[in-house]
Length: 456
Image (cartoon, rainbow, N blue to C red; front, side, top):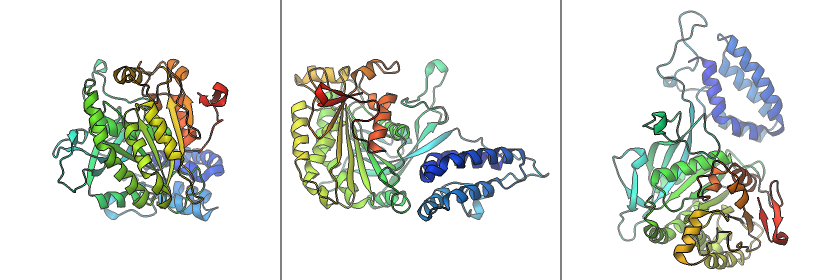
């Protein structure tokens, strides 16, 4: 592999964050970088890494804070670091004649690896591959011990990934094994102790103070999955959602012992109730000890039972945590509508303090959600995320109704339930909420029912 190819691969891995850091200087930088890369591609004798690093520095040096953070970003790459360890070698080609390329042993990967920190109370399955490291049962632990296990997973997102899709092997394409260059897959799992896990989270945070309110590099996004979700699916979904959201901070997946089976709904209900206190413990831990600027929460389906109970339990303590609770997203909540309304009303009744602004709560509801319609029939009670029999509105929480946008989506799985991570329009709206802190009215929203809620 030529040096220029390694440099381009490294640039791709940090591009979104680099552009965000450069701000208004990003456009002229990109134009000049394109010309430089073309020149370097035609002249392999030049030191591509050094010239690209110098160009990046010339645009970052105008601001000391930006310069420091860009330098920290470059240190995460193989070719653009200021110094490389001797045993890592030189990314430039080493050959006999000048300009002669010597191929490396393996081809360049055509995917990026997204880190997902996880906390789980599923049963541990040591010796199993990464995709089966944890099972469907409750974790075994002694009385007085925490049921949570911690670690860091690496998830592949292929270069050909399409926003909202969960690429997986297709038998009709003769694909019988996962390939990280083609599919979203759990590549590796690094099991960590509690203190090592927190230290890893802190170390991976943004370098220095955040630039502005829209900078999420020092934030944490916590994802809580719903019913019928296995261990690997939960980790992959967290990575895919975070990547498509263009979230620039750290992603944490809390995965509870869902059975991952269609006919195990009542088992999942019981396990979700059992897991509630464990998530409260995790959330408190992140707000107290992660060192992040903000923690954002996103729960889907039955996972909203776990999350809504946790924020209700911690409402009175939020002002005492060093880390702020930022956005709280309720996506298609499979929660009794009356119970949900009471929990949110009580949570919002707690007085905010100036140092800790009130978290922004957003509910996404759909009238074409087949899963919530089935849940309503089972329980004989309305669900908070089901818009068929009226919309749940609890000001100042924002309620967004997405029925038509889901019905019009040709890529929907015909259940209308996973739109938060599969519908490009909903993902774009979530991007506005989490990354830009945009309150309604915002692009794509129109007032409904006299302004009581919003329709996407």
